[in-house]
Amino acid sequence: MHRRTFVSGVAAGAVAGLAGCLGGDDDAPTTDEGHIEALRAEITDRGVEVDSVELEDRIVSVEHGFDEDPNDAIANVAMAFVERIIDEWDVERLEGHLHDEGNDWSWHAETEWAQEYADEEIGPEEYGQRISETMAMVIDEDGASETDTDEDDDAGDDGGENADDGSDGGDADGDADSDDEPTDDE
Image 1: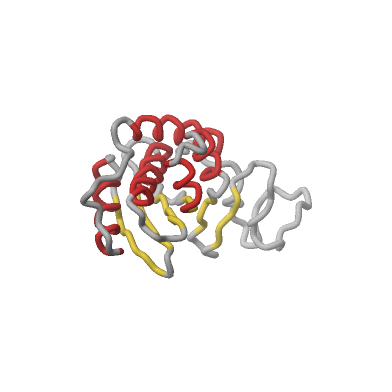
Image 2 (image 1 turned 120 degrees about the vertical axis):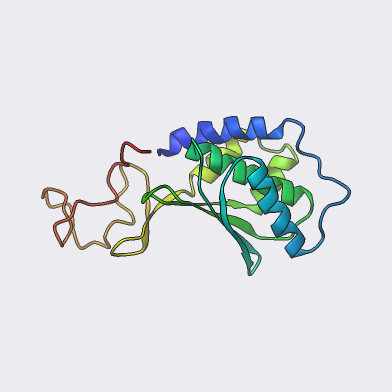
């Protein structure tokens, strides 16, 4: 999944997600537990499989999957977060973790961005762009590190062990680098 693809996915998902949704409601939960349960329900109602929702130090963590399109799943989780911010949940940000059959992605949305979106200070394209700039592929085998997904950026590779020496792209143990181009599944 490329960032540019994600941006259009978030924009489309955000616009679709807004139809009749924003505006808060008078019976909004006022406790963190209430917001957590409401966030889980809103994400599920948007068709996204939720693995976990946790709150620690004012940071909401959501682990989720996707049904057909990972971009739509991220957009729907981000829009559900906007709903919680509209209902005055006092958190710092949402950290998302998308499970994608071995190609997991981390991303986040700052509360400030969600509030700006809710207040119509930024549009869905800007909100989506900001989120897409936070995306990183999670490498969970042999290193548990994250890497930036820009094609021309070597940040987050294997820590400098394999300088660009013109070799075949394998790492120290002979495996292909896992932070190169995303696979066909993305």
